[in-house]
Length: 367
Image (tube, rainbow, N blue to C red; front, side, top):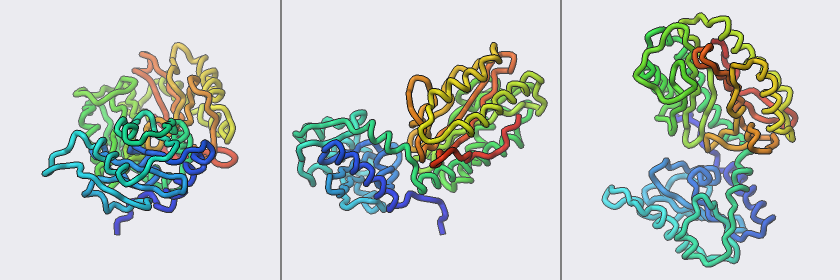
């Protein structure tokens, strides 16, 4: 029996209910969904990047889903499934988006007010449905922040692949290892752990650098290797980081910087709870790390993760988010300087509970 987790259709119906409540609050009669990740969130269907889908949820709670003909039997939290031809004689159609929406809207009648995700707003829908269109995408992003139990299971499954990747990296990182060889080995570990190819594979694989894709370069003793790793599992992303000292003997400076970063995590555990300010947490950590200059902490402190690699909450002063129960987020303090052989970044994942926060990546942090 296949034990790989999938989204639960009952939980998808609960997510549809949360969108219905938003529709009722704003007086929206129907919502057209065209973002693939939102369709996964609402229906449980993940098609990958090459196939278009769309759905309409009406104010009575009925969801109509349009899928490629060959995917029409995919289990889905939908009341009706219609289909379109995504390929002709195995050739991918370049006009899938238009064909998909046309097939979907042919089955439905327009109402007074319709919502859509304006970043993927479909001109063909606007031409077919002459109604008042409103942007519901910001509201959907907010609703998606609260992770349901089935989503947390998929995120945990992806994170288990990450844990195994770090474990393998610690086994094989020795002076002379090529960045490309490490990348290939970690991809193998991810596939083996997931039992299928990941739907995403990233992010940072460069040694003696802040980040980037792997190069044809061998690591050297004394360098630090920041591994900020993520895999995708059926559309859900993982994202966490560890830093490994090549040769296993970090310098006194590297060890000191590492300890400064480790000391950030108790602050996060104590600070985070529903209603707490993400901006204030960022500023607190920035002030805590500022005395370490010229070592620099000059990026965000973290972000939400889910069906997109970066979601709310934003631990970033350019947003004014507050933590909410159900948030799944990263915290990734870093310090960078040439003296450190590029720098160190450590990244943990947390889930906000009703009265605090839970660490969900309790794996070794050591250099």
